[in-house]
Image: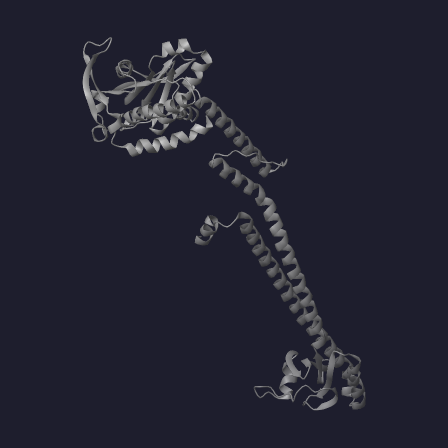
Amino acid sequence: MSIFRRYEKSSVPLVINWSLSISVLIILVMGLLGWFLLENQQAAFKRQAKTLGLALVDQLAYSASEPLLADDNFALQMLVNRQEDNQLIVGMQVFDLDGKSLASAGISPFDFQSDHGEGLLDILQRERTGREWVLGEIHGEIFVSPVQFKDVTAGYALVSLNKKPLQEDLDLLILTLMKTTAALILFGVVLATFLARRFSQPIANLAKMGEALSNGHIQNLEVSGRGDEIGKVLNSFQQMALGLEGKKEVELALSRYVSPNIAKRVLDGKHTSELGGSTEDASVLFCDIVGFTELAEDLEPEQVSELLNHYFHFFSLASTSCEGTVDKFIGDCIMIIFGVPESDHLHALHAVTCGVLIQAIADRITRQRQSVGLPTVQFKVGINSGPVLAGNLGGRDRMQFTVVGDTVNVASRLCDQCKPGEVLITADTTQQPGLADNIQFNNMSKIKVRGRTGTVVHYDVDINSFSDAALIKKHLENIFPHWSAT
Protein backbone atom coordinates (compact mmCIF):
# COMPACT_ATOMS: atom_id res chain seq x y z
CA MET A 1 0.00 0.00 0.00
CA SER A 2 2.87 2.38 0.73
CA ILE A 3 4.07 1.97 -2.87
CA PHE A 4 0.67 3.05 -4.19
CA ARG A 5 0.59 6.00 -1.79
CA ARG A 6 4.02 7.15 -2.95
CA TYR A 7 2.85 6.65 -6.54
CA GLU A 8 -0.25 8.80 -5.95
CA LYS A 9 1.76 11.53 -4.19
CA SER A 10 4.48 11.55 -6.82
CA SER A 11 5.15 14.85 -8.58
CA VAL A 12 6.00 13.05 -11.84
CA PRO A 13 3.77 14.33 -14.68
CA LEU A 14 0.61 12.32 -15.27
CA VAL A 15 1.55 11.44 -18.85
CA ILE A 16 4.77 9.78 -17.66
CA ASN A 17 2.98 7.93 -14.84
CA TRP A 18 0.31 6.64 -17.19
CA SER A 19 2.82 5.74 -19.90
CA LEU A 20 4.94 3.76 -17.46
CA SER A 21 1.91 2.09 -15.87
CA ILE A 22 0.35 1.04 -19.17
CA SER A 23 3.74 0.01 -20.56
CA VAL A 24 4.51 -2.16 -17.52
CA LEU A 25 1.06 -3.72 -17.80
CA ILE A 26 1.56 -4.45 -21.50
CA ILE A 27 5.03 -5.89 -20.86
CA LEU A 28 3.69 -8.16 -18.10
CA VAL A 29 0.72 -9.32 -20.17
CA MET A 30 2.76 -9.92 -23.32
CA GLY A 31 5.56 -11.52 -21.31
CA LEU A 32 3.13 -13.94 -19.63
CA LEU A 33 1.44 -14.62 -22.96
CA GLY A 34 4.81 -15.28 -24.63
CA TRP A 35 5.90 -17.54 -21.78
CA PHE A 36 2.61 -19.43 -21.99
CA LEU A 37 2.97 -19.92 -25.76
CA LEU A 38 6.57 -21.05 -25.42
CA GLU A 39 5.69 -23.53 -22.70
CA ASN A 40 2.85 -24.86 -24.83
CA GLN A 41 5.11 -25.21 -27.88
CA GLN A 42 7.76 -27.04 -25.88
CA ALA A 43 5.14 -29.38 -24.43
CA ALA A 44 3.70 -29.90 -27.90
CA PHE A 45 7.20 -30.66 -29.22
CA LYS A 46 7.75 -33.31 -26.57
CA ARG A 47 4.36 -34.87 -27.28
CA GLN A 48 5.06 -34.80 -31.03
CA ALA A 49 8.47 -36.46 -30.60
CA LYS A 50 7.05 -39.10 -28.27
CA THR A 51 4.10 -39.83 -30.53
CA LEU A 52 6.37 -40.14 -33.56
CA GLY A 53 8.90 -42.33 -31.76
CA LEU A 54 6.26 -44.68 -30.39
CA ALA A 55 4.57 -44.91 -33.76
CA LEU A 56 7.86 -45.81 -35.47
CA VAL A 57 8.93 -48.39 -32.90
CA ASP A 58 5.47 -49.99 -32.84
CA GLN A 59 5.55 -50.20 -36.63
CA LEU A 60 9.01 -51.81 -36.48
CA ALA A 61 7.84 -54.28 -33.81
CA TYR A 62 4.77 -55.22 -35.86
CA SER A 63 6.80 -55.69 -39.07
CA ALA A 64 9.51 -57.72 -37.30
CA SER A 65 7.20 -60.19 -35.60
CA GLU A 66 6.96 -62.73 -38.45
CA PRO A 67 10.66 -62.61 -39.53
CA LEU A 68 11.71 -62.89 -35.87
CA LEU A 69 9.57 -66.00 -35.24
CA ALA A 70 10.81 -67.48 -38.51
CA ASP A 71 14.46 -66.77 -37.58
CA ASP A 72 14.74 -64.86 -40.83
CA ASN A 73 17.59 -62.54 -39.86
CA PHE A 74 18.04 -61.42 -43.43
CA ALA A 75 14.49 -60.11 -43.56
CA LEU A 76 15.03 -58.39 -40.19
CA GLN A 77 18.17 -56.71 -41.50
CA MET A 78 16.37 -55.51 -44.61
CA LEU A 79 13.62 -54.18 -42.39
CA VAL A 80 15.91 -52.11 -40.15
CA ASN A 81 17.91 -50.85 -43.13
CA ARG A 82 14.89 -48.80 -44.12
CA GLN A 83 15.76 -46.34 -41.34
CA GLU A 84 17.92 -44.51 -43.84
CA ASP A 85 14.73 -43.36 -45.57
CA ASN A 86 13.77 -41.22 -42.55
CA GLN A 87 16.18 -38.46 -41.45
CA LEU A 88 14.69 -38.44 -37.98
CA ILE A 89 15.73 -42.06 -37.33
CA VAL A 90 19.42 -42.51 -36.48
CA GLY A 91 19.28 -46.16 -35.56
CA MET A 92 17.13 -49.33 -35.41
CA GLN A 93 17.78 -52.61 -33.66
CA VAL A 94 15.89 -55.86 -33.14
CA PHE A 95 16.77 -58.09 -30.14
CA ASP A 96 15.71 -61.52 -29.05
CA LEU A 97 14.37 -62.26 -25.58
CA ASP A 98 17.88 -62.59 -24.19
CA GLY A 99 18.92 -59.16 -25.47
CA LYS A 100 20.99 -60.47 -28.36
CA SER A 101 21.04 -58.17 -31.37
CA LEU A 102 19.52 -59.91 -34.39
CA ALA A 103 19.52 -56.92 -36.78
CA SER A 104 21.00 -53.46 -36.46
CA ALA A 105 21.25 -50.35 -38.65
CA GLY A 106 22.48 -46.84 -38.07
CA ILE A 107 24.06 -45.58 -34.87
CA SER A 108 23.95 -47.59 -31.67
CA PRO A 109 23.49 -44.79 -29.17
CA PHE A 110 25.42 -46.27 -26.25
CA ASP A 111 26.36 -49.52 -24.68
CA PHE A 112 22.93 -49.69 -22.99
CA GLN A 113 24.39 -49.78 -19.48
CA SER A 114 22.53 -47.40 -17.17
CA ASP A 115 24.02 -45.33 -14.38
CA HIS A 116 22.53 -47.79 -11.89
CA GLY A 117 24.05 -50.86 -13.42
CA GLU A 118 21.03 -51.74 -15.46
CA GLY A 119 21.70 -54.14 -18.31
CA LEU A 120 20.36 -54.09 -21.85
CA LEU A 121 17.70 -56.62 -21.04
CA ASP A 122 16.47 -54.58 -18.09
CA ILE A 123 16.11 -51.55 -20.32
CA LEU A 124 14.31 -53.46 -23.05
CA GLN A 125 11.88 -55.07 -20.60
CA ARG A 126 11.11 -51.91 -18.62
CA GLU A 127 11.29 -48.82 -20.81
CA ARG A 128 9.09 -47.65 -23.63
CA THR A 129 10.50 -44.16 -24.03
CA GLY A 130 12.28 -41.34 -22.26
CA ARG A 131 15.94 -42.33 -22.23
CA GLU A 132 17.86 -39.61 -24.07
CA TRP A 133 21.42 -39.60 -25.35
CA VAL A 134 23.79 -37.22 -27.13
CA LEU A 135 26.42 -38.16 -29.66
CA GLY A 136 28.15 -35.20 -31.32
CA GLU A 137 25.46 -33.10 -32.95
CA ILE A 138 22.89 -35.87 -32.57
CA HIS A 139 20.40 -35.49 -29.74
CA GLY A 140 18.56 -38.77 -29.64
CA GLU A 141 15.87 -40.55 -27.62
CA ILE A 142 15.28 -44.29 -27.32
CA PHE A 143 11.90 -45.91 -27.91
CA VAL A 144 11.38 -49.62 -27.13
CA SER A 145 8.51 -51.95 -28.00
CA PRO A 146 8.12 -55.71 -27.49
CA VAL A 147 7.82 -57.82 -30.65
CA GLN A 148 4.70 -59.91 -30.12
CA PHE A 149 2.74 -62.46 -32.10
CA LYS A 150 -0.63 -63.60 -30.73
CA ASP A 151 0.21 -62.38 -27.21
CA VAL A 152 3.60 -64.11 -27.35
CA THR A 153 6.68 -61.90 -26.90
CA ALA A 154 9.41 -62.98 -29.29
CA GLY A 155 11.88 -60.13 -28.82
CA TYR A 156 12.27 -56.37 -28.68
CA ALA A 157 12.40 -53.54 -31.23
CA LEU A 158 14.39 -50.35 -30.52
CA VAL A 159 14.31 -47.08 -32.46
CA SER A 160 16.70 -44.18 -31.79
CA LEU A 161 15.05 -40.91 -32.83
CA ASN A 162 17.09 -37.82 -33.69
CA LYS A 163 15.35 -34.84 -32.04
CA LYS A 164 17.67 -32.19 -33.48
CA PRO A 165 15.56 -31.33 -36.59
CA LEU A 166 12.49 -31.04 -34.40
CA GLN A 167 14.47 -28.92 -31.90
CA GLU A 168 15.64 -26.63 -34.70
CA ASP A 169 12.04 -26.13 -35.81
CA LEU A 170 11.11 -25.43 -32.19
CA ASP A 171 13.98 -22.95 -31.78
CA LEU A 172 12.89 -21.15 -34.94
CA LEU A 173 9.34 -20.99 -33.66
CA ILE A 174 10.53 -19.73 -30.25
CA LEU A 175 12.65 -17.05 -31.92
CA THR A 176 9.66 -15.99 -34.01
CA LEU A 177 7.48 -15.84 -30.90
CA MET A 178 10.10 -13.80 -29.03
CA LYS A 179 10.43 -11.34 -31.89
CA THR A 180 6.66 -11.08 -32.20
CA THR A 181 6.32 -10.54 -28.45
CA ALA A 182 9.06 -7.89 -28.46
CA ALA A 183 7.42 -6.14 -31.43
CA LEU A 184 4.04 -6.21 -29.70
CA ILE A 185 5.59 -4.88 -26.49
CA LEU A 186 7.28 -2.06 -28.41
CA PHE A 187 4.05 -1.28 -30.22
CA GLY A 188 2.17 -1.41 -26.92
CA VAL A 189 4.63 0.99 -25.26
CA VAL A 190 4.33 3.44 -28.17
CA LEU A 191 0.55 3.11 -28.12
CA ALA A 192 0.50 3.50 -24.33
CA THR A 193 2.56 6.69 -24.57
CA PHE A 194 0.25 8.06 -27.25
CA LEU A 195 -2.91 7.15 -25.34
CA ALA A 196 -1.50 8.43 -22.04
CA ARG A 197 -0.59 11.74 -23.66
CA ARG A 198 -4.00 11.97 -25.33
CA PHE A 199 -5.92 11.11 -22.16
CA SER A 200 -3.77 13.22 -19.84
CA GLN A 201 -3.66 16.33 -22.03
CA PRO A 202 -7.15 17.53 -21.01
CA ILE A 203 -6.27 16.91 -17.36
CA ALA A 204 -2.99 18.78 -17.85
CA ASN A 205 -4.97 21.65 -19.37
CA LEU A 206 -7.28 21.60 -16.36
CA ALA A 207 -4.28 21.64 -14.01
CA LYS A 208 -2.76 24.60 -15.86
CA MET A 209 -6.03 26.46 -15.79
CA GLY A 210 -6.53 25.66 -12.11
CA GLU A 211 -3.04 26.97 -11.40
CA ALA A 212 -3.81 30.09 -13.40
CA LEU A 213 -7.05 30.55 -11.46
CA SER A 214 -5.24 30.19 -8.15
CA ASN A 215 -2.83 32.90 -9.32
CA GLY A 216 -5.69 35.17 -10.27
CA HIS A 217 -5.38 34.74 -14.03
CA ILE A 218 -8.43 33.63 -15.98
CA GLN A 219 -7.71 31.74 -19.20
CA ASN A 220 -10.08 30.31 -21.77
CA LEU A 221 -9.96 26.54 -22.10
CA GLU A 222 -10.53 24.85 -25.46
CA VAL A 223 -13.01 22.04 -24.83
CA SER A 224 -12.60 20.65 -28.41
CA GLY A 225 -16.23 19.49 -28.60
CA ARG A 226 -15.69 16.21 -26.72
CA GLY A 227 -18.89 14.41 -25.72
CA ASP A 228 -17.41 11.95 -23.22
CA GLU A 229 -16.84 12.33 -19.49
CA ILE A 230 -13.64 14.31 -20.06
CA GLY A 231 -15.54 16.68 -22.33
CA LYS A 232 -18.20 17.15 -19.66
CA VAL A 233 -15.54 17.93 -17.07
CA LEU A 234 -13.90 20.39 -19.45
CA ASN A 235 -17.22 22.07 -20.12
CA SER A 236 -17.99 22.28 -16.40
CA PHE A 237 -14.57 23.69 -15.69
CA GLN A 238 -14.96 26.16 -18.52
CA GLN A 239 -18.26 27.35 -17.08
CA MET A 240 -16.69 27.61 -13.63
CA ALA A 241 -13.79 29.64 -15.06
CA LEU A 242 -16.21 31.96 -16.83
CA GLY A 243 -18.17 32.28 -13.61
CA LEU A 244 -15.03 33.16 -11.67
CA GLU A 245 -14.08 35.64 -14.36
CA GLY A 246 -17.52 37.21 -14.11
CA LYS A 247 -17.27 37.26 -10.32
CA LYS A 248 -13.86 38.90 -10.54
CA GLU A 249 -15.26 41.59 -12.85
CA VAL A 250 -18.23 42.15 -10.52
CA GLU A 251 -15.92 42.30 -7.52
CA LEU A 252 -13.67 44.78 -9.31
CA ALA A 253 -16.64 46.93 -10.29
CA LEU A 254 -18.20 46.68 -6.83
CA SER A 255 -14.91 47.54 -5.12
CA ARG A 256 -14.95 50.88 -6.92
CA TYR A 257 -18.13 51.83 -5.09
CA VAL A 258 -17.60 50.11 -1.75
CA SER A 259 -14.50 49.03 0.12
CA PRO A 260 -12.72 46.11 -1.62
CA ASN A 261 -12.74 43.96 1.51
CA ILE A 262 -16.48 44.57 1.98
CA ALA A 263 -17.09 43.75 -1.70
CA LYS A 264 -15.16 40.50 -1.32
CA ARG A 265 -17.08 39.56 1.84
CA VAL A 266 -20.39 40.22 0.08
CA LEU A 267 -19.47 38.08 -2.96
CA ASP A 268 -18.05 35.30 -0.78
CA GLY A 269 -21.27 35.19 1.23
CA LYS A 270 -19.53 36.17 4.49
CA HIS A 271 -21.45 39.44 4.75
CA THR A 272 -25.04 39.26 5.95
CA SER A 273 -27.75 41.01 3.96
CA GLU A 274 -29.91 41.62 7.02
CA LEU A 275 -30.44 45.17 8.30
CA GLY A 276 -28.81 46.09 11.59
CA GLY A 277 -25.46 45.06 12.94
CA SER A 278 -23.35 44.53 16.02
CA THR A 279 -21.41 46.72 18.42
CA GLU A 280 -17.68 46.76 17.73
CA ASP A 281 -14.71 48.64 19.13
CA ALA A 282 -13.26 50.79 16.34
CA SER A 283 -11.67 54.07 15.35
CA VAL A 284 -13.20 56.59 12.95
CA LEU A 285 -11.25 59.12 10.88
CA PHE A 286 -12.76 62.13 9.14
CA CYS A 287 -10.68 64.13 6.66
CA ASP A 288 -12.10 67.41 5.39
CA ILE A 289 -10.92 70.17 3.04
CA VAL A 290 -10.31 73.59 4.54
CA GLY A 291 -12.33 76.37 2.83
CA PHE A 292 -13.93 74.13 0.24
CA THR A 293 -17.00 76.34 -0.21
CA GLU A 294 -14.93 79.33 -1.29
CA LEU A 295 -12.74 77.11 -3.48
CA ALA A 296 -15.72 75.58 -5.26
CA GLU A 297 -17.10 79.05 -5.93
CA ASP A 298 -13.93 80.06 -7.79
CA LEU A 299 -13.45 76.83 -9.81
CA GLU A 300 -15.37 75.09 -12.55
CA PRO A 301 -17.12 71.83 -11.55
CA GLU A 302 -14.66 69.84 -13.66
CA GLN A 303 -11.73 71.45 -11.84
CA VAL A 304 -13.30 70.70 -8.46
CA SER A 305 -13.84 67.05 -9.48
CA GLU A 306 -10.24 66.73 -10.72
CA LEU A 307 -8.86 68.22 -7.49
CA LEU A 308 -10.93 66.00 -5.20
CA ASN A 309 -10.17 62.86 -7.21
CA HIS A 310 -6.47 63.64 -7.21
CA TYR A 311 -6.20 63.94 -3.45
CA PHE A 312 -8.78 61.30 -2.50
CA HIS A 313 -7.15 58.70 -4.76
CA PHE A 314 -3.97 58.78 -2.68
CA PHE A 315 -5.90 59.09 0.60
CA SER A 316 -7.68 55.86 -0.33
CA LEU A 317 -4.30 54.19 -0.89
CA ALA A 318 -3.20 55.48 2.51
CA SER A 319 -6.31 53.94 4.08
CA THR A 320 -5.60 50.53 2.56
CA SER A 321 -1.93 50.60 3.58
CA CYS A 322 -2.94 51.32 7.20
CA GLU A 323 -5.52 48.50 7.49
CA GLY A 324 -8.40 50.97 7.10
CA THR A 325 -11.62 50.89 5.09
CA VAL A 326 -13.00 53.89 3.23
CA ASP A 327 -16.56 54.03 4.46
CA LYS A 328 -17.75 56.83 2.20
CA PHE A 329 -16.90 60.04 0.37
CA ILE A 330 -19.14 62.89 1.53
CA GLY A 331 -18.60 65.76 -0.86
CA ASP A 332 -15.27 67.24 0.19
CA CYS A 333 -14.92 64.84 3.14
CA ILE A 334 -13.67 61.26 3.39
CA MET A 335 -14.65 58.90 6.22
CA ILE A 336 -12.34 55.99 7.04
CA ILE A 337 -13.02 53.29 9.64
CA PHE A 338 -10.53 51.01 11.42
CA GLY A 339 -11.32 47.77 13.25
CA VAL A 340 -14.36 46.94 11.11
CA PRO A 341 -15.35 44.93 9.20
CA GLU A 342 -12.12 43.11 10.09
CA SER A 343 -11.29 43.08 13.79
CA ASP A 344 -8.07 44.93 14.70
CA HIS A 345 -6.94 45.53 18.29
CA LEU A 346 -4.49 48.22 17.05
CA HIS A 347 -7.20 50.12 15.17
CA ALA A 348 -6.42 53.42 16.95
CA LEU A 349 -2.69 53.23 16.13
CA HIS A 350 -3.51 52.48 12.50
CA ALA A 351 -6.02 55.34 12.39
CA VAL A 352 -3.53 57.90 13.76
CA THR A 353 -0.82 56.56 11.44
CA CYS A 354 -3.22 57.01 8.54
CA GLY A 355 -4.01 60.61 9.67
CA VAL A 356 -0.30 61.48 9.78
CA LEU A 357 0.20 59.78 6.43
CA ILE A 358 -2.70 61.74 4.86
CA GLN A 359 -1.15 65.04 5.91
CA ALA A 360 2.23 63.93 4.52
CA ILE A 361 0.60 62.90 1.24
CA ALA A 362 -1.38 66.16 1.04
CA ASP A 363 1.82 68.15 1.56
CA ARG A 364 3.61 66.27 -1.22
CA ILE A 365 0.68 66.57 -3.64
CA THR A 366 0.28 70.28 -2.86
CA ARG A 367 3.93 71.01 -3.63
CA GLN A 368 3.67 69.07 -6.89
CA ARG A 369 0.48 70.87 -7.96
CA GLN A 370 1.95 74.26 -7.06
CA SER A 371 4.93 73.53 -9.28
CA VAL A 372 2.65 73.23 -12.32
CA GLY A 373 0.24 76.01 -11.37
CA LEU A 374 -2.74 73.87 -10.30
CA PRO A 375 -5.07 74.85 -7.43
CA THR A 376 -4.27 73.33 -4.04
CA VAL A 377 -6.08 72.78 -0.75
CA GLN A 378 -5.30 71.96 2.87
CA PHE A 379 -6.84 69.23 4.97
CA LYS A 380 -7.82 68.68 8.58
CA VAL A 381 -8.15 65.28 10.26
CA GLY A 382 -10.19 64.27 13.30
CA ILE A 383 -10.03 60.82 14.92
CA ASN A 384 -12.10 59.24 17.68
CA SER A 385 -12.16 55.70 19.10
CA GLY A 386 -14.83 53.75 20.94
CA PRO A 387 -17.88 51.53 20.46
CA VAL A 388 -19.75 51.78 17.16
CA LEU A 389 -22.69 49.96 15.61
CA ALA A 390 -21.30 48.27 12.51
CA GLY A 391 -23.78 46.82 10.03
CA ASN A 392 -26.26 47.44 7.24
CA LEU A 393 -28.29 50.64 7.22
CA GLY A 394 -31.03 51.61 4.76
CA GLY A 395 -33.89 49.58 3.32
CA ARG A 396 -34.22 45.94 2.31
CA ASP A 397 -33.96 46.85 -1.36
CA ARG A 398 -31.03 49.21 -0.89
CA MET A 399 -28.59 49.25 1.99
CA GLN A 400 -25.07 50.27 2.92
CA PHE A 401 -22.52 48.84 5.30
CA THR A 402 -21.36 51.60 7.64
CA VAL A 403 -20.79 52.50 11.28
CA VAL A 404 -22.95 54.84 13.39
CA GLY A 405 -22.97 56.05 16.94
CA ASP A 406 -21.61 58.70 19.25
CA THR A 407 -18.04 57.76 18.39
CA VAL A 408 -18.69 58.65 14.75
CA ASN A 409 -20.41 61.93 15.61
CA VAL A 410 -17.57 63.05 17.88
CA ALA A 411 -14.97 62.26 15.19
CA SER A 412 -16.92 64.36 12.68
CA ARG A 413 -17.31 67.31 15.10
CA LEU A 414 -13.63 67.04 16.07
CA CYS A 415 -12.64 67.32 12.40
CA ASP A 416 -14.62 70.58 12.22
CA GLN A 417 -12.46 72.01 15.03
CA CYS A 418 -9.14 71.25 13.33
CA LYS A 419 -6.84 73.81 11.85
CA PRO A 420 -5.30 73.29 8.39
CA GLY A 421 -2.70 70.48 8.46
CA GLU A 422 -3.69 69.28 11.95
CA VAL A 423 -4.54 65.81 13.23
CA LEU A 424 -6.73 65.93 16.35
CA ILE A 425 -7.51 62.85 18.43
CA THR A 426 -9.73 62.39 21.44
CA ALA A 427 -8.66 61.29 24.89
CA ASP A 428 -10.43 57.97 24.24
CA THR A 429 -8.15 57.39 21.27
CA THR A 430 -5.02 58.09 23.34
CA GLN A 431 -6.01 55.27 25.72
CA GLN A 432 -5.99 52.65 22.97
CA PRO A 433 -3.11 50.10 22.69
CA GLY A 434 0.09 51.27 21.02
CA LEU A 435 -0.62 55.01 21.01
CA ALA A 436 1.50 56.12 23.97
CA ASP A 437 4.62 54.36 22.62
CA ASN A 438 4.48 55.88 19.14
CA ILE A 439 2.81 59.29 19.28
CA GLN A 440 3.45 62.53 21.12
CA PHE A 441 0.35 64.49 22.10
CA ASN A 442 0.31 68.26 22.55
CA ASN A 443 -2.10 71.03 23.45
CA MET A 444 -4.81 69.25 25.36
CA SER A 445 -8.09 71.14 25.14
CA LYS A 446 -11.80 70.67 25.41
CA ILE A 447 -14.58 71.29 22.97
CA LYS A 448 -18.33 71.37 23.25
CA VAL A 449 -19.97 68.91 20.85
CA ARG A 450 -23.48 69.63 19.68
CA GLY A 451 -25.96 67.18 21.14
CA ARG A 452 -23.76 66.21 24.11
CA THR A 453 -24.06 67.61 27.63
CA GLY A 454 -20.36 67.29 28.45
CA THR A 455 -17.17 68.35 26.72
CA VAL A 456 -14.73 66.30 24.65
CA VAL A 457 -11.07 66.28 25.57
CA HIS A 458 -8.78 66.17 22.54
CA TYR A 459 -5.08 66.41 21.70
CA ASP A 460 -3.07 67.70 18.80
CA VAL A 461 -0.80 65.02 17.28
CA ASP A 462 2.76 66.24 16.85
CA ILE A 463 3.22 65.11 13.26
CA ASN A 464 6.88 66.06 13.09
CA SER A 465 7.73 63.91 16.13
CA PHE A 466 5.85 60.80 15.03
CA SER A 467 8.12 58.10 16.47
CA ASP A 468 7.80 55.61 13.62
CA ALA A 469 8.96 57.93 10.85
CA ALA A 470 10.39 54.96 8.99
CA LEU A 471 6.88 53.50 8.75
CA ILE A 472 5.50 56.71 7.26
CA LYS A 473 8.38 56.81 4.78
CA LYS A 474 7.72 53.19 3.78
CA HIS A 475 4.03 53.93 3.22
CA LEU A 476 4.90 56.95 1.10
CA GLU A 477 7.30 54.89 -1.03
CA ASN A 478 4.59 52.27 -1.58
CA ILE A 479 1.92 54.84 -2.44
CA PHE A 480 3.68 57.32 -4.68
CA PRO A 481 4.76 54.83 -7.37
CA HIS A 482 1.09 55.19 -8.36
CA TRP A 483 1.78 58.84 -9.13
CA SER A 484 2.86 58.16 -12.71
CA ALA A 485 -0.32 56.19 -13.32
CA THR A 486 -2.67 59.05 -12.37
